[in-house]
Image 1 (cartoon, helix red, strand yellow):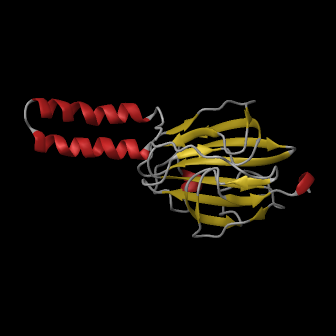
Image 2 (image 1 turned 90 degrees about the vertical axis):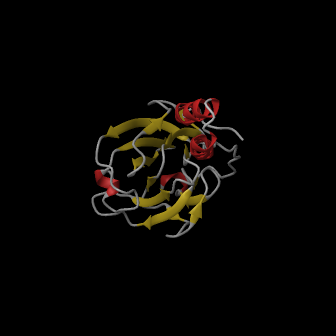
Image 3 (image 1 turned 135 degrees about the vertical axis):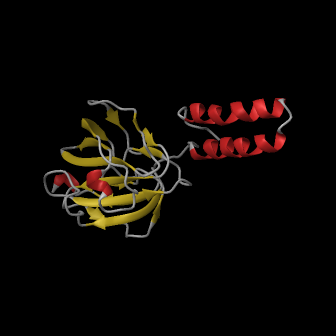
Length: 212
């Protein structure tokens, strides 16, 4: 199993006291820190996945449960006409984010905000978030990372102008969070609220051919 490099500061912070306590013979006190280190490693796991999709198919950008599929939540979407898919990630889900579709990163917009629980409707418009705008053959798809009550940091590892392949890793969100996907109005939504999806694997929508 491969782990994201963001894990090591957290894992080290749990392992150091565990080792020190073990050295002085406080084995029982060391156990909780070892358990915590194990959970942190599990949280930052980065499984290798092979994306198989057609050029116009949109894949899930994150693991989790679909909480919005179709019409946009009031006040949540960027300016313009959109459809929305939102995915809630629990602390047990893989938190690596993957590109929903191949294309060029047009812009990246970070906005500070609150830390409401990620499953709340208000989280999409009030929480700290980061938007990645992707141009796919003239059609724009917006992928928004949103922090939750536990997730206090977003990681985005692409820059404006970068070329992304469908399913390519672009970042992660630390601990419980959500990700919003905004699609053109003519896109066909293929998931429903309550569905479980896997990043880079589950096909969640299909864009209109030729942008129509």
